[in-house]
Image (cartoon, rainbow, N blue to C red; front, side):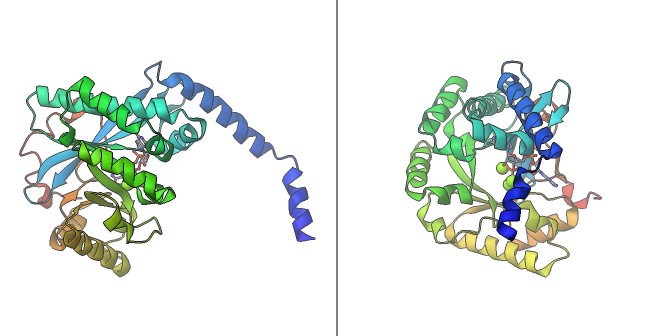
Length: 287
Ligand code: C2E
Ligand code: MG
Ligand code: MG
Ligand code: MG
């Protein structure tokens, strides 16, 4: 029978599987030490308001500079850290570091901007998350209105009541809440009126296709219209060329983020870019 064969197949020795497991274990043991060895870094990517082409915020994006393997992207180690619980110390470090970097820019006399931090499932649902965020704000002195948290919609749907309770606590402290990867979560739109949220971040997959694919354009247009009616701000991620920027401007999008402006970069590289008029001519730049 097919079912039996499937079961037998599963037991066949598979060198690739073995290699995968070994690789995983080695990555995991290295990740345990990465924090202590200062191998984790935060990069930042600017977010620009379309109303005046000014940078209004940055998103913090974690990187792992592995001694032998070079730069490892979060897609490769955040899921691992989620599974083994390392996301808790790593996530707490990222929140604290993001606030610290933002405070340093302010102290250097740059215009005040928000910093957005991504929270993954285990981190968000952990009972300490509010305290971890409070401690970071307190230690660094960053006012809460300059901190944003990004959470995916699928994460919110996992445990709706608990998620609402956590978001309410964060909101009461003055922290801004953004739904990340919006449009990809297969979840009901009704939740938007239940959760206390401020921002929808339209997933890059829609923006990439906005010029070629009528369907993507329609979806982006509908998300923006709906957000406006609900009183939510919209950020488009993954903006790579001026034609996409132009369309988003026409549709009334509030804020854009993507390689067109800048790839995620270390904090020291962003000083000139955070000056008030840096992006004044962005609409006329070649792709
Ligand atoms: P995300 O929050 O949706 O971040 C957007 C991703 O798109 C980032 O990938 C960013 O570098 C990339 N990106 C930005 N602009 C463009 C563009 O114009 N074109 C293209 N093709 N890509 C663009 P990255 O940095 O590899 O991060 C991947 C994901 O890892 C993030 O998705 C986020 O979910 C997660 N992540 C990153 N940092 C953290 C963190 O500190 N904590 C947690 N829990 N998750 C994180
Ligand atoms: Mg994000
Ligand atoms: Mg996203
Ligand atoms: Mg994403």
